[in-house]
Every structure is written in C-alpha cells, then in structure tokens.
Image (tube, rainbow, N blue to C red):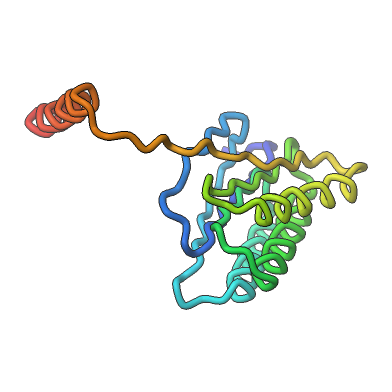
Length: 172
C-alpha cells in the first residue's frame, strides 16, 4: 500500500563519557526511522561528527528528513568537543529541511560545568538566530541532579517491591 505520508527520522547522538541516557519523551516526534550514534571510547569528537554527517546524508538520500535530533552531551569542555557539537548541530539542522515539525534538543548532564552550559546555550542561541526564518525548534534541556541520599527504609521497601515485581513477572 502506497502512502503520501512523509517518512521522517529521529537521530540521537551520544557523546563518549555519558553516564546513563536520560529519558527523552518526544511524543510529538512520530519518526518512522530512528538512529542512535554513540561515540566510541577511542573515537575523537571530529570522527563522531563525520559519522553523524554520513548518517544524516544517508537519511536525506533516502528521503527521510530528520524531524527530531537529540544530542546527549557529556561533561567534556574542550575546543574539539565544542567544534564537534557545532558541526553536528549544523549537519542535523540541514538534514531537517522538509521535516514538518523539526526539533533539535541538547541534553547536558547535571554535572556539566558553567562553562559547558554557556557553550551549549551559545550553540543553541546562535542556531536560533541563524534559523529565525526556518521552522526548527532549538532547545537545551537541563536535567535536574539526582539527590544523593542515604538509603532509607522507604527506598529499601521500593527496591524490594521492584525486585519482587520483577521476579513475579519473570515467573508468569
């Protein structure tokens, strides 16, 4: 069955050093194709950017513009990381041409330094100004730090319930 509906893609880029992928709830991104590009431990930021460029070009060639892109940033602050983020962001925005509700989201870790936060906001702000005539939403979503607390009986009780629930589900 042929459909006239546009095939779109969602790309998640994960920098090396990220400890746990935050939950990204994007119900308004009904992409038909999804890609996760994770930086390998021995891969430079520039090499990661090249892989993102290749994947984005492949999607565009296959007529699947990127509708939603998420860059999960590490807490690294260095010139080569900044340059890589800029290249990746520009690439993803170019790949969004023709997407109906394009979004580019940066998600830094709570441990990111003030300098790192300023850099991400600088990239997002620059893109927003440059894209004022293009329908792409650019945002930075700061995650709240998880409070570090001593395990209480309530925490242990919830953990026990979770374990019991998992065991019961496995037995079913």
